[in-house]
Amino acid sequence: MSNEPQIAIDNVAHVYRPPRGRPVLALEEISLQVQPREFLALLGPSGCGKSTLLYLIGGFLPIERGSITVNGEPVKAPGPDRGIVFQHFALFPWKTVRDNILYGLERQNMPKTERLARAQAFIDLVGLSGFEDSFPSQLSGGMKQRTALARTLAFDPSILLMDEPFGALDAITRDEMNVELLRIWGEGAGGTQSAERKTILFVTHSIPEAVFLADRVVVMTPRPGRIARICPVGLRRPRTPEARASAEFGQLSLEIYELLTASSV
Image (cartoon, rainbow, N blue to C red; front, side):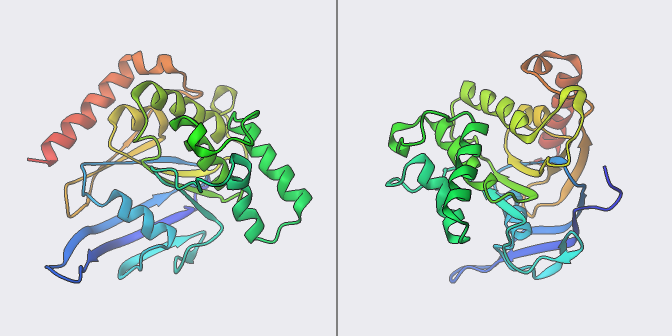
């Protein structure tokens, strides 16, 4: 990895100020650096500010205290270098798989031939060949999330911000999507990295999911969210489902569980 962080977060805090009621301090004293092509998981209890941090990086919320830079530039608004994938798909129900993916490309005024070829390339990448003309109501949950992922990847952002993307799926489908995400991310034989591999920040409540996917797991405290510890994941890549049965996987999962339960007391 490069010595220069792709994302630099320095002493960030965030306060929600509802129209009624008292302000809520969601995040406090968050400092973190993310390297290019790194897979980073944000893990913590509900309400600890994981998603808030993701939206601050994405430029969807104003940065009131501290600073966030992406490739050395301060984050001031959303940009094409950062794509976001939500938990609940956010697909247009009246559009087919192909048209959902094409929507953003059309708004970029990409020539028709180019955007059709690009949409098909990402349909193939996420394993939806043959379902191009299907509507969301005809798809399983996993297929809907594949469509949402393909739509985001079609923009070719260098950073993927994933907000509990598999949280609504059943356990088996979720495990399958974890494996597929690593494949799509470009995990090469022997764990080699390609220049096209995206940087991913992945929000989850699941300890096994975080350990299976990530290079590092950022464990956060209850609100106001702070970083309790950053845990490197030493599991070799490429990772297969069998990695979940390893002693190293179990030991790190237990350590993170004990850290989370201790910080919630």
